[in-house]
Image (tube, rainbow, N blue to C red; front, side, top):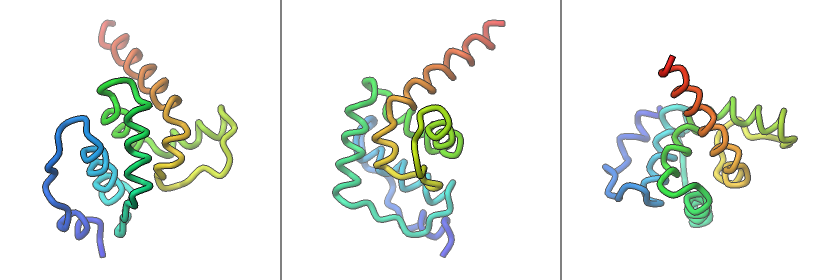
Length: 122
């Protein structure tokens, strides 16, 4: 089964912006499209972790932080290893790992946004 086959079975998102449902859809879609995962089952524990993730992010930023992290997972996990001493970082995104390191993502995203703004002003 290909990642595209998984996406065919996903319902069109019926969630409001900034909801756990939206994060869940983003997670499943990204793992299928970007990481080649063909079987993605989110348990209640995973959904609860996404809710905690949303609560730990600055207000209204959870979707952008999650999107950035999923798109840059290898960079993010290597940074967690090299700079912050994380051990056994997952190759494929894992919600629990993400939840533990969410503050690092927010800091990185803020730094990247400042860098982009600075380059645009030049």
